[in-house]
Image 1 (tube, rainbow, N blue to C red):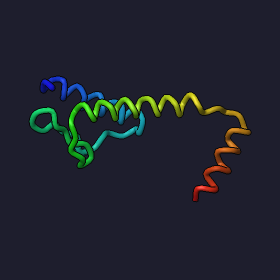
Image 2 (image 1 turned 30 degrees about the horizontal axis):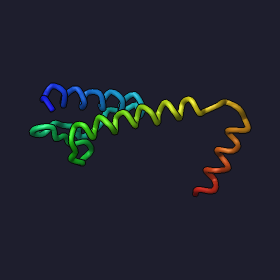
Image 3 (image 1 turned 120 degrees about the vertical axis):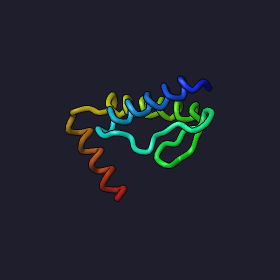
Image 4 (image 1 turned 90 degrees about the horizontal axis):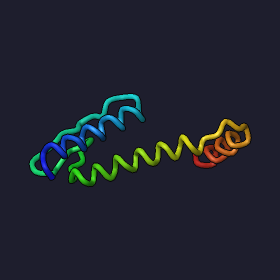
Length: 84
């Protein structure tokens, strides 16, 4: 993977991360070739691109699935109560 594409993948991840979590991504850097480090985890840039796409998809899914209806909020709270 060309170096400029690796930088684009890193920039895309950082942008998505900051948009979702409202804080900058930590420990994100390019290594030699198409290797990157994200939060201490070494991976190929194409793996980071896939993970970034998953973050986007999951975040959109969460937003689309949320409904302001009281019944849905009650079910969610009940489910969370059982988890902990």
